[in-house]
Amino acid sequence: MPDINRQPENIPALELLAGDVVTAAEALLGRVLIKEENGRQLKARIVETEAYHEFNDPACHAARGRTKRNSVMFEKAGHIYVYFTYGMHYCMNLVAEDEGRAAAVLIRAVEPLNNIDLIKTRRPKAKKDADLTNGPAKLCRAFNITTKQNGFFLGRESISIVEAQKDFTRPEIVKTTRIGISKGRELPWRFYLKGNRFVSKP
DNA sequence: CAGTCGATGTACT
DNA sequence: GTACATCGACTGG
Image 1 (cartoon, helix red, strand yellow):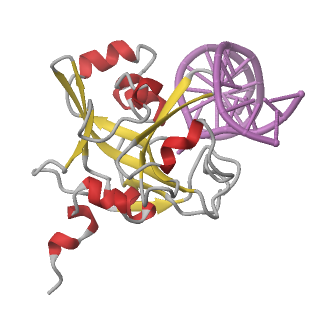
Image 2 (tube, rainbow, N blue to C red):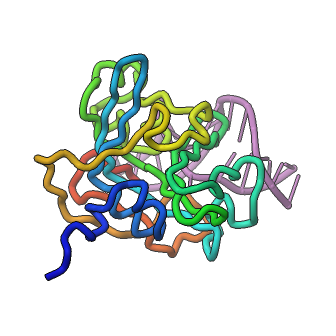
Image 3 (cartoon, rainbow, N blue to C red):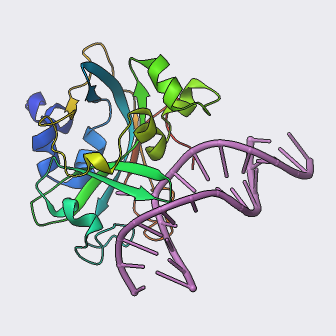
């Protein structure tokens, strides 16, 4: 009998992130992202992720070595890497694998679990609920995550990841190629919860 | 619906 | 100078 507690989806987030980044990206689906903001707790279920790795992955920010921007990717697993892009957007990643090796999981989409009214004020252009957080920059906007959080460590500061809710049954997971990139398109390193309406569109 | 395109600032060549 | 791990507005069907 296999030990069910050793299945990736049951391994604590920090331990999971310390291992293979692609395995971690898949096993993070369904877990809950929490952000603390002056006594308030924002919660959202992770529904879409992508893996990035410095080796054999030209789309990775660290594909050509360490720079000022990507340096957090080389830190210990569990750090948070936030970058600014397109002149106006932020995207959040969870650093994975061994310290000194750059790898990270991009959180592409989440499903808000509370504070919906607050999120709506931060995403005034959203036409329907799914638009609130169905993209990497949208969720950062909804959770007020910017480069101010770059270098934070999970559970140590205002951002943490906890296990999936007990009453949540994980649906089938879809494994496919990453989107929004021009290099490394062939790698099947994007994962999402099948049928979830908060999953982003290519 | 789908396709196209401008916004807007930074990192890196 | 160019590209960018995006979004939202706009067009045409």
